[in-house]
Length: 150
Image (tube, rainbow, N blue to C red; front, side, top):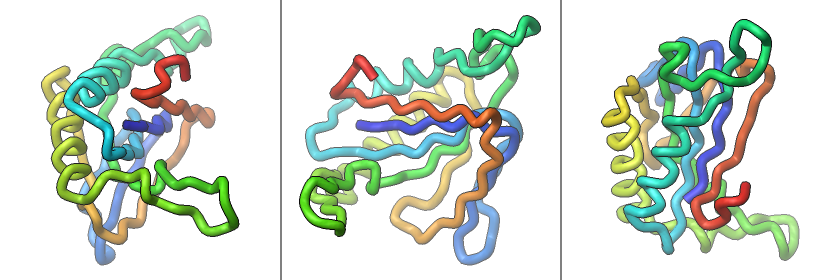
């Protein structure tokens, strides 16, 4: 499972021209699921996101977590995080989980973040979404449950 975190001042997601999720200050999460992922991956990444310290404190040090700043989460399913570009110029997405499995784990991940006490807004799984992000910093961090050194 992969989660790309972008620290955001405000963000929203639209489907068919209608805003279906929006946040003020917080994290926009692009969430990709592979066919090897389990509930262990969900729990690991939810814990990492919930405790990640990406906001500046009074001394301009990146030392504050989402809860420290009263932040929110906009979570977007993103199968293209598993795009393989090793061969040719057209990515292969065979490493992405099948939709039923991916959606179930994506929903479990969002629920786990809610259980940490965060407001979690979401896009629409499998839809053509338009995501607007005001990336703060910019700060962007990639987490991968299979490569816990990232």
